[in-house]
Amino acid sequence: MLVFRIAHKKYAKNLSVSGLSGRWNSNGKLVLYTSESVSLAFLENMIYRVGTGFNDDYKLMIIEIPEQNIEGIEIKKLSKNWRKIEHYDELQKMGDSWYDQQKRLVLRAPSSVIPEDYNLIINTTHIDFKKVKLIDILDYEPDERLEKLLKKYQ
Image 1 (tube, rainbow, N blue to C red):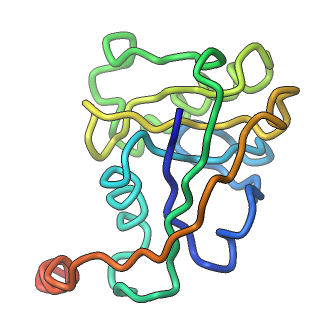
Image 2 (tube, rainbow, N blue to C red; image 1 turned 90 degrees about the horizontal axis):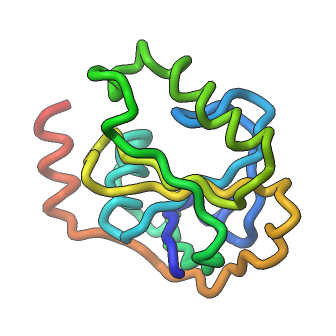
């Protein structure tokens, strides 16, 4: 299965991670956030770089993961306001539990940007992480109209 990540060119050369906390992990959990589509990867990336603009500093990473090693989280099992930042603790506990159990390589979790779409979080300490492959790194510079639209509302 192919998944996608948009990252600064400095971090797009390999599958390294920082260990910083995210929606589905607390600090120290070495996970790699990816998305099931390029468009979702773009939206997830833009949330964190509003105002920095589009340029050739960002790359599209195409990553292959084994499909049979995925654990999923269903939206119906989440609290009503799970997308709000106040619920990070709840979601991090779920993600940390998945990470610590080491049963599955990948956690398929709904995106807070578009809940009908999913991010795939890869546990880089899992025994099967060696099966994850960085297939390609492509230039990624979205349509400039998107940048104009975003800057209009800053």
